[in-house]
Length: 363
Length: 133
Image (cartoon, rainbow over all chains, first blue to last red; front, side):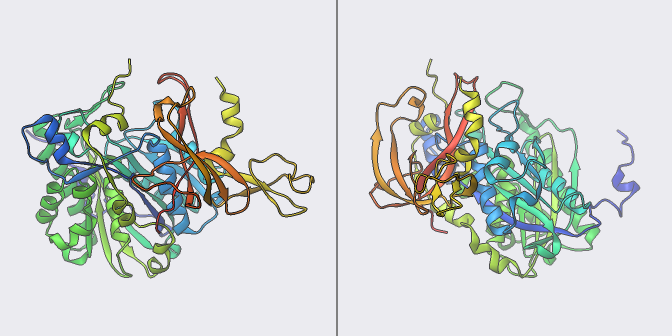
């Protein structure tokens, strides 16, 4: 089968997305709800034993959804940014579990954090990369000079069919980022790069409660192809190797995939583990790579380079190359850390889980 | 259906937006445009910090219509750091026993949903035990 020459071949040196004005992450905030479902609980109900691939996953409480969790992450990001919310020119929420099918999550989040009415607001959807897509758009808005600050959020109360492999991992949580001028940032955005293709690995049709997966498409042609192409292109075009980065954060549907993708790309487990939260909170879908990055920013030092690569089914990856600045030291203590949220935990059993996640038919 | 009321109250409910009296500096919640302390006109917006202490509390086991979904839950009178008392649900309690004097902080949560999966979702303030930052 012959294929058209790709853009990669045609403009191989111009693929990275870079802005005229230098941008960076001015504030960041994580959110993880307090309930945890151990993998052994799912196994107890649905199999003869075992525990699945993660120790436990985070579960939203009865009064939580993507909007309430986005509000808390956004408040944390605003605390670290230290800016007047009226200076934001965009509030964007990426998720595959927006509470309304029609009615934006972003306007409610904007109202709650005291943003002005003079903003862009909309909901992004691209499976697990909806949040990083909003980050790319926020970078473009700030980098073009259309606005000084933009808020991008990736947040999910992830869906998984009862008994399905996804039920072990589909979790709740995410993170928010205030993108602004590089000279005010805790981490400069050197470049981003996105790689997408039509790949049938995972989807959810309208009005369906749970997603379907395209079985054999899940690994190589989907996750690994997109993550590794995005990461390799970024490294090649910046003239770097894995060794030039202190940390790497990959989308984490389970603990194994990001470790393998990292190893394929030349990263060591020490570079990946600080941003690998899947073992303790599961897969927060659109929040997964973004909250991996907040965990890394919580411990990073000035001069550290971070590579973040998201993955969304359907399919695509956004890669970000970041360089941490000295401002990180004074900002990180201004809001709860990712580890604070992970440490705040109440284990639940499968019965409580079915109530919290609305799996009981009340007639 | 109370859509106009939900819309009118959204600022105070989402973000504890109250007022400050320009005459005697009293902080006012909920906002009522007249200072309860000095009787003067008070229309200046004031965002409360959301920090406070539990003044009193009770557990609701027989929830009123519209709140059954969350039952049982704890309702508290919270003395805000800035002065006013507010009545609100507590959330994220975990195993921590609720106690009078316990420090709490405001979070914005789902309060209720109007109509079975069709109506508006109403968001508003609740309080939880203060998280160590």
